Length: 104
Image 1 (cartoon, rainbow, N blue to C red):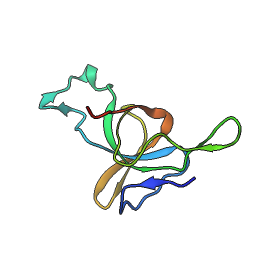
Image 2 (image 1 turned 45 degrees about the vertical axis):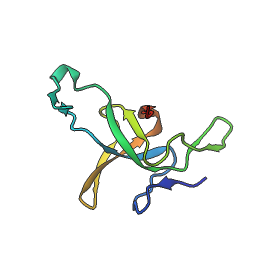
Image 3 (image 1 turned 180 degrees about the horizontal axis):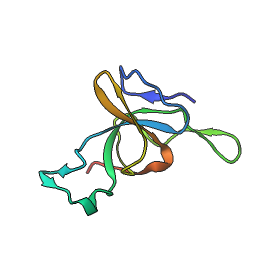
């Protein structure tokens, strides 16, 4: 299996991990200030790079169901943050992703 990244992206996650860039300020969504009790809602981000996959019960590597550019919902406190070329990103484990946003 090989990893998949947006063109020109310089960081490659391993195995079942994704590189995600959050797309909304967690305190302000659509111009509305989010109350403290709502701050634990899932966060939305854009997948920048996808690891090669995870090892299943048979010991085989399976690809992740994500592609660069996908908009995903993930747990608010999921992942490890880091900076790359002045931009903030998260390394998120595949199991922390709640879903993929489908365009209508």
